[in-house]
Image 1 (spheres, rainbow, N blue to C red):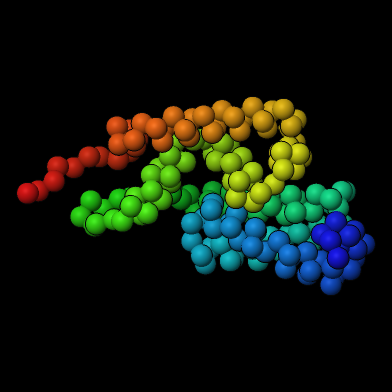
Image 2 (cartoon, rainbow, N blue to C red):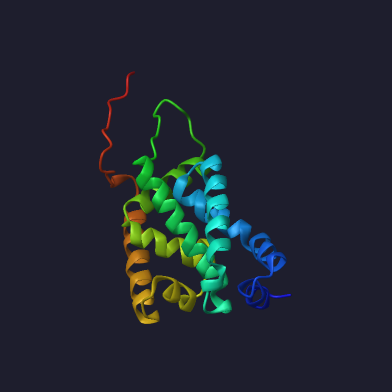
Length: 182
């Protein structure tokens, strides 16, 4: 059974269909929560809250075709609430004394590059490329036109590309460069 038909049944009160939907999209929900919260335990707790909120309001979902998008939006909202509540500032710290492999450095550079983007740009890239939503689904989720999403994606990817092309010349705001001891 496809997600849309399960959503139609869940909207009408079928608890088994709702459980099937959550099982179907749980990986995407977890990836989204983990991307925001950067902590496995917090991500799992967020998914529990998402499940609760979604179950409570599944009857309000107007379009079964957008069930996955709706759940991802709830996940993003739960994560934003959690980040506001804990007032966390998430920054990637690099310990100069540790030797890092090329893969580790690539991951760190990618995270640093993403931190240079606005929250909205990171959210957009996450929805499109991590959750694999279509332009239409992203537009529906954010309640803007598809053209606006395409423009924002183009600009965000351009900024990301420019930052990555700068290589080691870039400066990360908030980080102090320390002299190495010999």
